[in-house]
Amino acid sequence: MDEKFALSIIVTNQSGVLTRISSLFSQRGFNIDTFTSGETENPEYARITITASGDQHKKDQLIKQISKLYDVKKVEVMEPDNTILRELLIVKVSAKGEKLREVLDAASVFRSNVVDMSPESVCIEITGETSKLDAFLNFVKAYGILEYCRTGLIAVKRGKNCLFKNTQTV
Image (cartoon, rainbow, N blue to C red; front, side):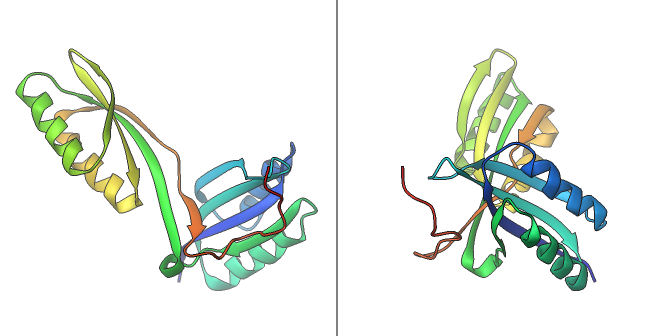
């Protein structure tokens, strides 16, 4: 049975690494749901967070193959109970007059920020768990979503545990 999972991967921060990792997913028959990457506290390393779905055997094989890549320093499944998972959404909603007030009230309830307004639309930035972002999108759908973009998940372990302690603080 397929299950959804999140991987955090520490890699050397150089060109070609993302291609090699995404190719492994393709070769193993995984569809990548979300893929985020960015520099860590040490610019020599980047942190990649990938979410996907698959059965346990295929997931284990994928992790073994990723771990063997030269540029990969650490790969770990991020357990939901011990992980902070967040993503960012910016959504542009068609709204004016009384409808604008309703959208702004909803934005307040969802603890989001208005980042741009025009006479006929509003752009709202919201961060949180995927379910929160999905709920907000479902709410504003009735007003008319003009466009939106999402970052994909990022993940960090709770407490003082770190994914990779072999980096130097800049």
